[in-house]
Each structure stands twice: as C-alpha cells, then as structure tokens.
Amino acid sequence: TDISGSTENELIFITGHNISGESVVLKCEDNTLEILYEGNDLFSNPYGMIKSVVIIDSLAIIGCTEGIWYYNINTNISTFTSINEIGLASIYSINGNAVNDFSVLSNWGMVKHFNGASWTTDSQLESFIPNDGSFFSRSIKYQNNIECIVGLTNSLQAILIIGINFRQ
Image 1: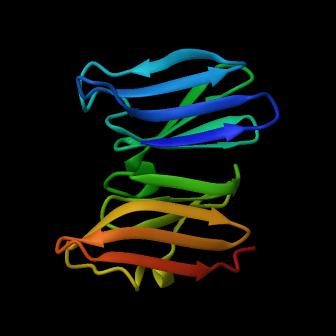
Image 2: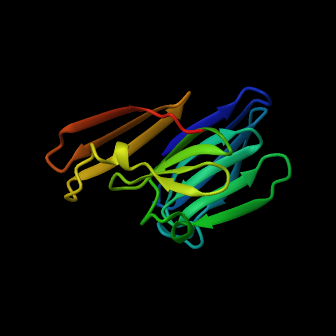
C-alpha cells in the first residue's frame, strides 16, 4: 500500500488491497474518489499485485509485481513496462525526482534506476543488502540524489540503507 499526491490539482493516488484481497488503485481529485483499477484477484493481469505509487509531473507511476504502470493524469492514457524490460523479478516500491530520474526496489532488495532512456542497476547500494534471500524490501525513497531503502530480515531485524547518488 502506498499514497502519493500532487498539490497542483488536489490529486491523490492510493494503492492497496480491498477487503477481498484484490489490488486496487484509487484516485481522489477535488474530493471525489474514483476506483481507477480493481483486480479480479490478488495477481490479476496485466499488473499483478499493485504495490506502490508516486506522482511525478503529469504521471502516476505505479509499481506492480509485473512491472510499471504509467498513468497520464491529463489524458487518462496508460502505458506499461514489464519487469522483463526492467530486469527485475518484481517491484515492491517506487520513488523519484522526475520521469527521467526514478528508482524501483524489488521484493528482495534489487535496485534499478531509470534515467529516461535506460535502466541501470545500483550495485553499490545493493552491496549493502543481504543477498542470501533473508532481506524483504519495504520502501525506497529517492529525492535530491539521496536514496533510502528500508526493509527487514527474516529474523525481523530492520535494515535502513542511505546512499548519496551522483548520477548525471
């Protein structure tokens, strides 16, 4: 579950699950709530489980287990990038500065950055994450070239990783 908003037009996007467990995306604009998406089950096609959302410019960028759903707020047009195109097994969290400068975090701590043209692995940041299958991602925040990752181990120990990014 996640929430992101825009002060420009009083717009909020909420991701999560309904009482039956299906993934949902809610759009709240000018105090009117709309169900933008509701899956038929937990892993409905084409998105899979909806995990995260960030509003950047005119896009709601929605992280799903099957990839990234780009929803244009102005035109209501959607596009989709699959996890295969990104090089991840799934997406747990997404955050960024601009549509050509955001990062995604997989369920098990893989970090990918999008620069507007291609995806790159942030191997330096990933080097601090246990790679033995014991790390479970919870959130990534990326702002002003500072990236923070929060997760926990299977023994319920919290992990916080903070990295300064010098991407051009």
